[in-house]
Length: 147
Length: 147
Picture 1: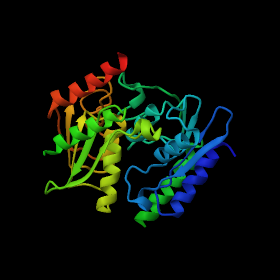
Picture 2 (picture 1 turned 120 degrees about the horizontal axis):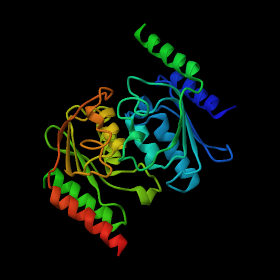
Picture 3 (picture 1 turned 120 degrees about the vertical axis):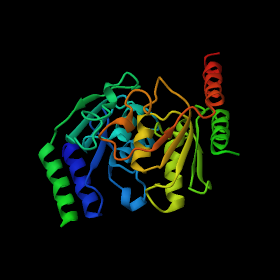
Picture 4 (picture 1 turned 135 degrees about the vertical axis):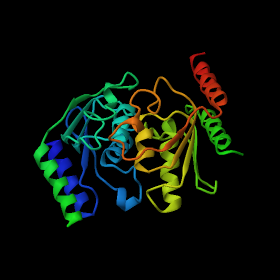
C-alpha cells in the first residue's frame, strides 16, 4: 500500500467510529511507516485530535525526536491552520495531502500558513493525491449525517 | 491572582525546566481555573506541546466537552498558527495574550488565523496584557541561552 492508501484506510476506520473521515500517516525517508492515525475528536472529546496531530505526536514518540526533517506526512485532506502549524513545528520534510479544502484548509486556502514569512519551516507540499477517493469519503460521511 | 498572573507563573516554571517560558490557563465564565500548562516541548520531545495546546486539551478533559464557548484562554505570548487553529477548533470564547510575537505569532501577525474567512470560530481577542512581564521573561531566557 502507498502511504496515501494507508491514510485512506485510516480515514475509513475513522468514519466507522463516527469521526470525520480523515486519516494520516508519517513515513521516514526509507518509506517505513512511523505512525498512523484517524480523527479522534469525538472519541476523546478533544477538538484538537485531528489525524495529523495524532500521527505527528505518535511519530515523534516513535522517533524519540521532536523534528522530522526526513519524514513525510500523508493525509487525506488539506490540513487546517492548527495542523499546518504543527507540521511546521515538527519540521516535517514533505506534506502530501488528498482533497483540497476550500472551507477549512490553511495550506492552499485561508491562512496559507507555509506562505507566511512567520512560518518556522516550509515543507515540500504535494496536494491532490487520491483526491477523488478522499473527497468522496468526506462527502458520503456528511451526506449520511444530514440524511 | 489574575489568570495572566497564573499564566506568568506557569511560564516561569517552564523556564526553570529548560522550556521556552510560555504559560497558559483556561478559565470558565465564573473565573474558575479549569487547566494550566507551561510549554512541555523539551520534556516530551513533542514539538506540539505548546502551553496553549496542553491547557486546552486539559480543560476539555476537565469539562468533558470539546467546545469552550464560555471559556477564556490566557497565555503569556501571542499564539502561533497551530495554537490559534486549536483555539478556533475548541471554540474558545476569549483569547487574552501577553507579549506580541512578530516572529511566530499568527493572531496579529503572519497567518492572522482569526481574520481568515476559513476560520471556524473567531474569539474575542485582547493582546498586550502584562506584555512587559511576559516579554522580559522570554528575552531573559533567550539571552541566557546565547550566553
